[in-house]
Image (cartoon, rainbow, N blue to C red; front, side, top):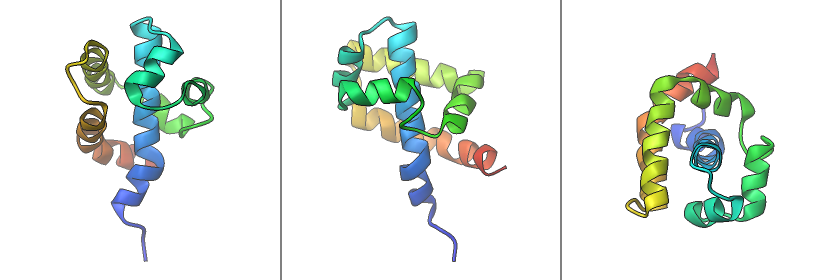
Length: 109
């Protein structure tokens, strides 16, 4: 019996999306790791682990960061998070719903 799609999302997609958001917030918006951690509701150590690719699937994160359509969506959400106009939990759910199916297809190949 195969695993349910939600298990794949929790184990691979959500950490990769969180890592992509952390990357955009830190690299593109110039926020400190501490500020990024506070915005995403994780520890500064988690941000460091995302940066060094220890906390998410490096392959899936690279897939996210290499696709213009996905990066633009992540950047849009990151801007809203940085300005405080979007709840982090809502942001993660929104991105996961929008991206999980297309990322699952590319990740499984």
